[in-house]
Image (spheres, rainbow, N blue to C red):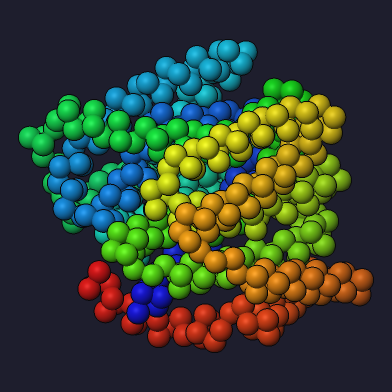
Length: 489
């Protein structure tokens, strides 16, 4: 029943996000880049990375800790809500001060500082929205959380779509307009999420405000904060270093190459959002996690391998549709960055498992190694290979981190190494690459190739027994069954 509940909610969340977020990425964000130009967008992308690296200062690990604790004991919400809201307000002030100091040390000035200030506001709003969503996911209301996960993007698509595709406003569109739209959309989403949380789970009662509890929460969340800061460094330092060392245009090419990986990573990120409270509750109750772990690994691992094979072989046609003027510059970057997609998927699963198990000190050591490796590799490889150096550093670091997360998850939770699934993944990789090289050799169009990839992929995953019949054909039945478990949960 738990497996059915898990799969049905994953399906709902994936469907909603697959419907909305690709539209945002390819029809809005990409068109913003093409409209404002590589110089403007390259600056914007680097400043976004800077605000994301340090956005842990807005949260200090409160959201992850809150999700984990409430999943184990939902009764804490009445006391935690007002204290955490106040704590996040104080942390926001600290964040703004530090982010502006860091930017000044990196020689940003003038308009770049104004854009940075706006982007810091965006991160503040986003952090608060994620925090409110943690109450929803901790109560296993994944369907409602799925709607909240795309609400801000729906609003952005509507507003930016009007501005970008209107002949009256497109010529005047600037990167500031893009950020103003994000600010408004996040603010509206926060209001709606706050209403849901206070109506459905708990009222905000200022009588429960306690500076002692806020201090205790901050102390408890410090390890989570350090962990997320280090993760931000090894996942986002590449863009910032590339812009500072090679300029905004090179960074814009890199951002264009990274865009498809970002949208692909959505699937892993969404799985992690569901897996954290599920793993936390199962481990707290000492239940078996192997079924959920195996299901998520085979689904994400298989899909990511198939996707990477198709994208590598058909990289030129894909990028010609998206960036017709810059295909030659972006193609090698895209092939390197997209090849790290399976690594991200495995990291989302096994790092989440270690988080749910409370192995925070171990995760800090792993991510510290990743951060140092990322900065060192980027400094060296960008110097010699420019934007391709950043892409190569991403590939090396992410796969190294994935292996480390898997190894230590097996060690700490006494999980056995599954040689069978490794061989199955290897066979899938060879098979799906062979299919795509064959289609490309026959000059098969990208449309036909994508459809034949789906067919070939399904044949391979079922033939190799990575998936069983229930993985796909019983989704509808699982959705109906999940309602029973939902009420019991």
